[in-house]
Image (cartoon, rainbow, N blue to C red):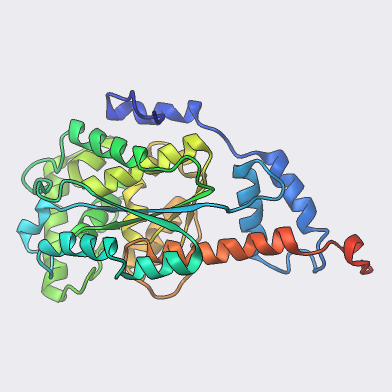
Length: 338
């Protein structure tokens, strides 16, 4: 049973923060003290030091470990494709899920290279969400069901969780969620996704503008139901479940980060245990990271999705812990300090 198993109303999500574990400052302080005693100038490893201390606080251990990394990729289909926002047909979602399952995608290779177990969860691909220009994408009941499915997919024995997604049309969904959550010009949130031309980008902008006008004012979690998809809801559920288990999370790029924007809008502290694996070239991602107050681990001009950037960042996180745990202190190495 996960922490959201008994939730019956989307508005109850914000109240969960009172039941969730917090960052262990004492463990982080111990990790910081260790970093400052290692055979290097203080701060010389930059963000590698920050990542090690982050992991220490969430694992509640001065020398955190990654013995088991779990990657989850959620897949869904979207009614907004009726507005011509997708350059590829929706059948590609199921075809790519099969590719994941047979080990042929980038995420398979990156998980193997960086030591993560991969699970792929297809979410009712034969029942796309509704066209959000015409009606809510999902009912509250459907949204909660997808959130709970995402939560139940989390391996509570994992030391770190990697999250990704697949769904034709979901770059439009992500931009819609981001625009609804943080405002601004819709066009500033919209990118080319899987290869939209200029006319395709304009169709995205028009669809999102219509969807926002139809939905009107929305509470944070209502954004997920009105404009989101099942994979976005599942990602939110997985993030909350991971927090309940005390598992740090690596989010992927624009779509994955936008998926949890309703959580950020509802209670920013719900994402304290989340890292962002990479900064996508999708133009809205930098704006999202600024809104979240987070800095991506990598900036590799990637825009694939699938959890690929998060899986690549896992290698950096493992390197951070290897240095943190394996380096000698000045005393151990009998090296004179300044």
